[in-house]
Length: 68
Image (cartoon, rainbow, N blue to C red; front, side, top):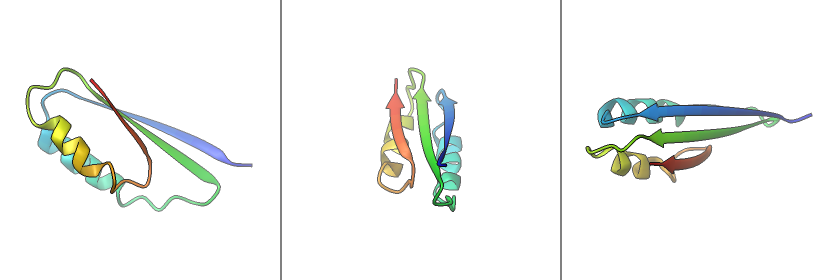
């Protein structure tokens, strides 16, 4: 039986903290029977958080969505 895990990360104008957070997700070794979903919520950010998120879209071994 496959297990699903959803993680939600919320951020507001914390681009460099977001970078560290997303970098840590690139280190995840996901077992074959576990599927991961990462939902990133950027709440009206005025800094470069959206650009940071886009840097990780292809690097993350997870489903990745940016909501703003």
